[in-house]
Each structure stands twice: as structure tokens, then as C-alpha cells.
Image 1 (cartoon, rainbow, N blue to C red):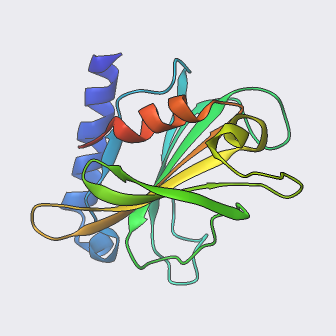
Image 2 (cartoon, rainbow, N blue to C red):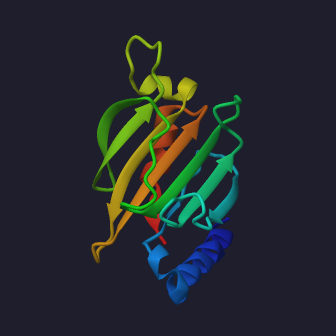
Length: 164
């Protein structure tokens, strides 16, 4: 698995850093080292068509979970900070924590929940969102979304994000 991940990471690095035509899309990329025991099924570089500003994003997908099923799943979404504005897709900010030394927000869907805490994440989905700043000062916005996973696993995925 580590060998496959290394090959994928090399491919991503070459794609982002060698193409002058993609200069607007260059941002430091990060990779999950832990997927909560789920099989990583895809790493995708977007075309930028999803964003009105044409910004590209990197997606890491594992498991089969979504809002519409009961399977576990994890999605990691990365983009250059300040590009391709998007809402969280979640209704309630639960709290803030530190991920790899950066301030992160924890979100979930808490409509109809009397006390919204991280305990609702397994049932209602959850998101940990932060901006990671490289040593050179470049900023990458990272969202780690979990479906049908407890908060502790979602947190472990987020804390396992590492520079490519």
C-alpha cells in the first residue's frame, strides 16, 4: 500500500509542479496516511470546471459512505486557500481544535438534535476543515469529511494528513 501511495504522490507532484499551463492551480498538496481502515478507492485531480474561478482541487476517496447510505466513507478535499468558494454542506459548527498546529473547525448536521456535539458525527456526518500553511507560506484549504464514522476516526484521518 505504501508503494502504491508513493507512486500516486509522485504522479501528483509531477502533474502540479511541471505544467506551466496549470500555474494558477499550483498549491501544496497533502495526502492522508490513514483512512479509518477503509479501502482508498480514488485520488482525483479535478478539471476546475466545478468552480466559477476555474480552480482545481484534489480529492481522496475511501469507503462507500455518503449521506444517502449506511456505509462508512471518508473524503479529503484540497484546494488553494481562497479559491473555489464553497459552503461546508453541514449546518452546525460544533467546535474548533488544532490539526497539525493549525486551527480547524468541526462541523456536523444537527437539525433536531438537542445538544450538538461530536457524538452526532457518526449518525449525521461530519467535517473537519482547516487551512494548512507550508513552510514557504503557501496555503491549502483541507476538508476531511466522514460518513457513518465516529468522530475519533474522522479526527485520526485529519491528523494523519501529511505533505506530499
